[in-house]
Image (tube, rainbow, N blue to C red; front, side, top):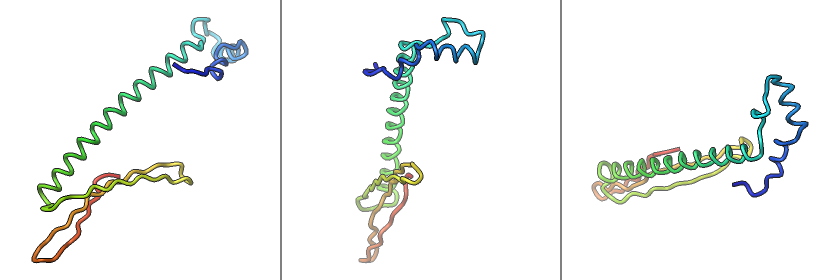
Length: 120
């Protein structure tokens, strides 16, 4: 649960309730928010988000296993390197994560570097 609920105190102020009733005149007392209801809502939304995040991480790790297996068994007779880099662009307020698989192919004593983007 939330530890510091000062911001949620607004939910129980009569002036805030008056604004809500002014926007929707048919509002009943039971329809008005309480600090407790908001805490429960935030907690439940966070738990749902956490479950989604865990499943996405699991899917991503399975995807990486499939990609690495594919490149290792199909196209890369040598070992592979999985490089991951994350960065942010402050001007766009965005974050990025890129993944690259690299390997060396040796044919006739000559080395050829291969790289493929597997995720962005």
